Image 1 (tube, rainbow, N blue to C red):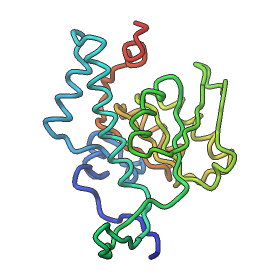
Image 2 (tube, rainbow, N blue to C red):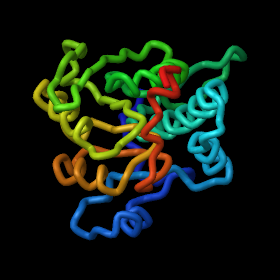
Image 3 (cartoon, one colour):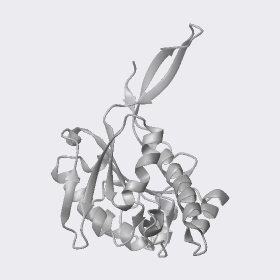
Length: 228
């Protein structure tokens, strides 16, 4: 088995901090660890359906799940892999790669729970913890792995609005020994203000989103879970 490595090239379906800096109009915030899915017609159509007030509950859930899956799949591209050699059913040797051990997910309830299924569909045995953070940013509940300090964490939260909930969640992870650079926030929609707040507080974490826009679907959780 070969040595582990982290991909150094930007995957073809994400943009780097150069384009993002223009959206944020801020040269003082570290953006090198902020990534946005490539603005394909498919991504824009999914976002359009999600933002449309006429979209039914069932359609909303269906298209949100599609967008979540795209974000999660791209997030997996940013985890470290190790080189391996396997044998095919025909007896041939095949040089491939496999995830390094130690990845996990943590969802910020309630919205983050909508992203758990996609992560489990991609990583069948992945462990997922939970946090519940109150409106006053108090930690109301946390269920984290005992060895989370040794893991890379995919933090699941669909809307990055003001950033206060994410900042609290990252603070809890760091307090539990997680290395800041081992935290990757997966979010569907992010505001410029929210990204600035989080990155100014924790510049070593990474953020992956489908879009950066002041207008985000703040009705996400109520419509997704059918409580609107």
